[in-house]
Image 1: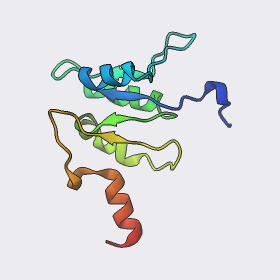
Image 2 (image 1 turned 180 degrees about the vertical axis):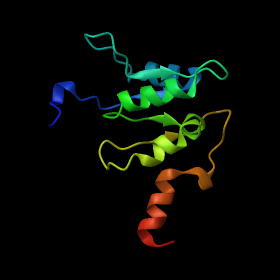
Image 3 (image 1 turned 135 degrees about the horizontal axis):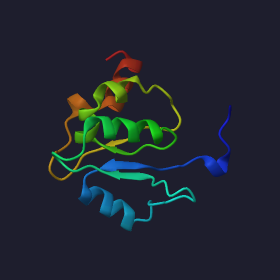
Image 4 (image 1 turned 180 degrees about the horizontal axis):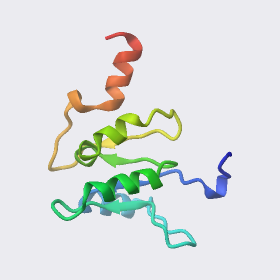
Length: 114
């Protein structure tokens, strides 16, 4: 069954407090009429992997996830194969970009046979 445009969310964020705050200040935050948020703040040592995975599944129509958090649920992220909506893993200030863990780069390399 196709999702109607009004039910579809274009952007969602799973990240640490600083990343979420910045993106919310940029205007990506949304709470729908059912009080569902398009973001999840992950706190080190407090947020369980199962909670992150559940949020990831609920936010399937919209993706923006911090790389360190994607690593915590890597099997779930790797199973996601849809082209749209795209999944974007962003580095945080505490965890710099590591090309060896970039799922998008790995898919591109696989496509081009590298």
